[in-house]
Image (cartoon, rainbow, N blue to C red; front, side, top):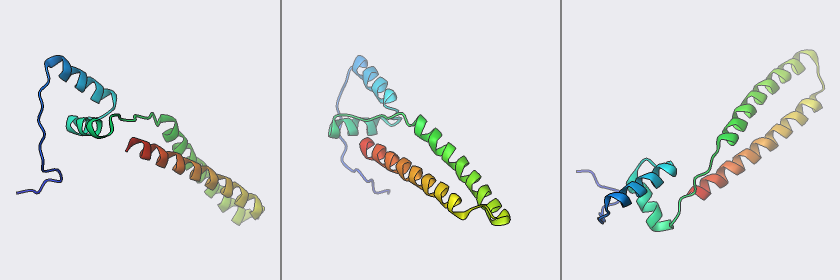
Length: 112
């Protein structure tokens, strides 16, 4: 028999209107598991739902920029472009990545 992570069951009754409200709010919070939604609400009293569309797009763009930088580095090694310029670009890109990672980690903490 599987040992459950949560082995204590709690039951309560709701009417149809309340159930519809719970399901609607769970969907609005992008939570597909009603038990997880109810547990989170009972413990924390709220769920933070953040739209990360812009951040995901920024990460995608950063990956494309990184690929371009790799091409620049290859050309720099082949044709002798100033190494300091390439390092400056890389440094700035690293700064942006650090900011994106920091923002994403803060969003994850807020969701918990």
